[in-house]
Image 1 (cartoon, rainbow, N blue to C red):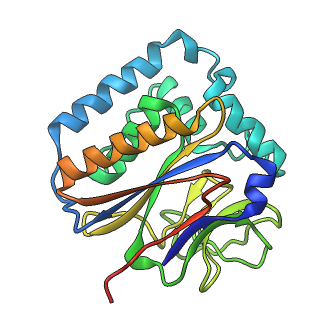
Image 2 (cartoon, rainbow, N blue to C red):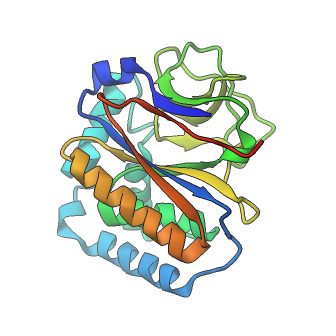
Length: 240
């Protein structure tokens, strides 16, 4: 399996970086009290942090709002995942502990104020690529597996090249139901996305932090990859 980013993405966003954590043989069934406690602390910090009072103007979040506008998506209607997460928390929402891997992604997002998502690789049949949509791809929204949508042409999507199945619409807006991570998931690829002011070095540090937690909490065998305009893809060996 090849996991990568199309050159068209870097033509629009030359300083974008993506960290990828591959976790093998994970145990996602245990609820980790330490992780849940950290999530509650991060939520409280997000509610009280004066830098997030006008959260859409925070540099980390504003860069994603601008990126969405650049590829034709209204970020107020279809907000980047980190913007939506902070908005919910600032309104008083408590982020549910769905499972440990999902909670680790939420922890990473809140701790560093970046988008973080992931997929069950056993539900993928081809290669994965972040690329502009043609509009012919198909998407089943998270929690609505019977609904079928098509992305807008030019929308940045993350897709399975074998069948055009969209894993995430509008870069980091909405995940797919088909590759959702559950308690039974054992093989994952988790993405940590860095847009300026987040640097390559910051993306690497955040990704390594996530990998360490996945290894510690889920007994995972982990691999870390960093993608940018100079290194756009990597090949992953999967069990036959």
